[in-house]
Image (cartoon, rainbow, N blue to C red):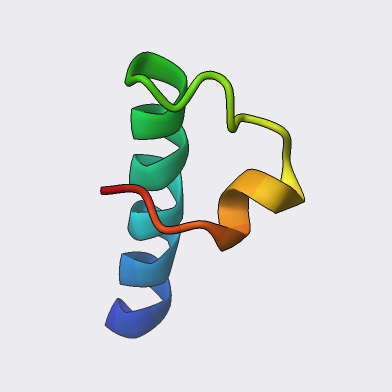
Length: 38
């Protein structure tokens, strides 16, 4: 249970960082999801 929730939060956090951060150029769905966001 907790593991799944954590995975969800990590996913959302990555997307949020990608949208609000400088990762705007990489925000292209699957391609961006594969690359780790530093």
